[in-house]
Length: 142
Image (cartoon, one colour):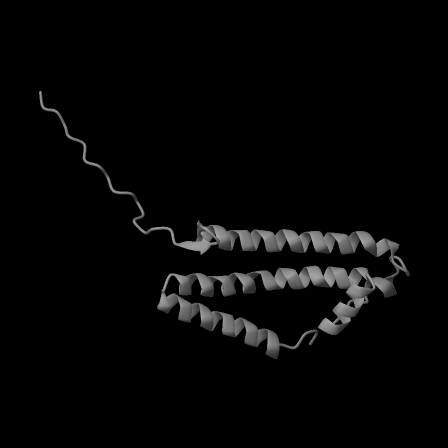
């Protein structure tokens, strides 16, 4: 009777997880990026929820004129935040939601540079430049 020898099968993926240094710890890059995306969405939702909860308690309450008045510039958002206008708080939540993937791209640039991966650093810098340019040249409310 013959005995069969089992050969060890290699893992499906041989690519190693990229680790980045945060303080004295080495953390997987996917965990950092996932944390940024998840944290940004949660923070955005909390800020928007606070604005929605404050909306009925603001002067003018839920009148159609009051609800339709949202800030359109960063200056208006800042002025509204100082006076706790609910629409400004909701707008801040939306800005956080928009900024979350941009922050993810910026962190990816840093992570790729720390890994000395020039190819992906350059590609990610181009993506970041396109995102920033689109914000600077875009026409809000057009």
